[in-house]
Length: 318
Image 1 (cartoon, rainbow, N blue to C red):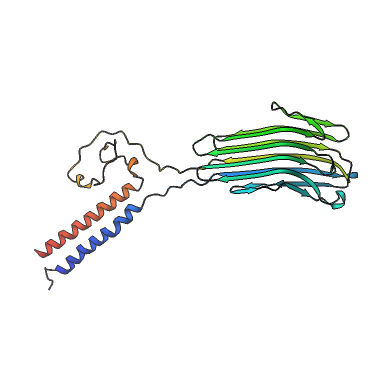
Image 2 (tube, rainbow, N blue to C red):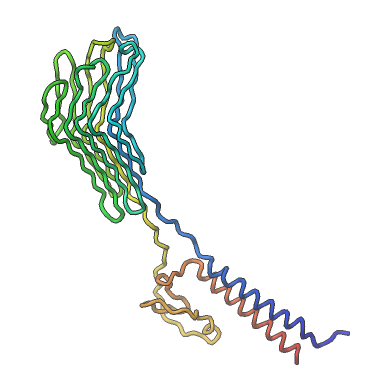
């Protein structure tokens, strides 16, 4: 025969409902979508980059020469003031000087707010294979800088200060276009001065770009062609924090709330200057997101479960 009084199971049912509500509530409240946060920007700098093709006498071979000095990525610094290289077939494989300078510094930094690359070169002399005594170019002071700060327009600048000598000839550089220097019996050099460019989130600057074509006819070198850049810097703006997506309130006529829906109102303080739109409300200013309907639905289910448990308990006691 079944009994009509089950006080202990009813109490247990109510206790279980309460425990489930206390356990599930933090989980529902914490189930908000994750939004990607911005990272650091990017910056780079280099004192020298060279991409040359060296042809040996009698066209026995073409030897590529690709090198750089003080090339850094953020975060990084370098300040070597000399660069040498060695090529098979050139001066019997002995090392030769490429660049010597009193100052040759490159610096690249990047944080969540700012990225910057900068170069400073002072009293520098550049050589190519086959011309150990004659400098391809001599410069006084060369600088380049690229700065990208969050919320600001990227900036780039490059400067060549002081005297410039190309293949032994004092040269005046112009910003309006390239400068060409020709030396009979040696070759020619084309120079582009102070190039800089920027976009909405990047910037780059190059102080000097040299297009080289020389004919040393010495040390087993017939011809040297290619490109050399002095003082190069670039940057990319930090991404910054991405804002949480929000939905614009829908235009709808206010609807009267029924007694059944009235208890479902949130007890949290309403967002300022936000008017309810029927049973929907704009929670963009209070941190509401696409997870809000799930939280409300879970809370309603837990409320109904607790109310059912209490009702069953009262009926079984009567």
